[in-house]
Image (cartoon, rainbow, N blue to C red; front, side):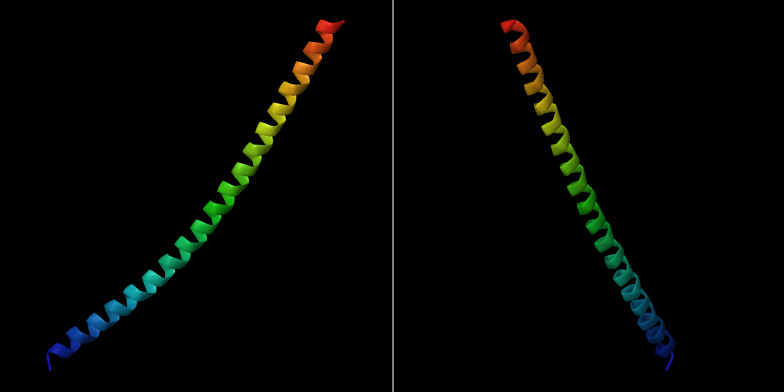
Length: 70
């Protein structure tokens, strides 16, 4: 029965590996969710900046046209 300690160590090692894999998957899932949230927030803010700059271009163009007409 000298193989019994080896079998116990293999089972304990596999159990430890499963625990580490489960924790890693949980952390990666949380990381992916956070990354998605940050990307969405950044895209929203970038869209707002683009909309504001477009509005400023239109406003400057209208002021420029009014100044030329006067």
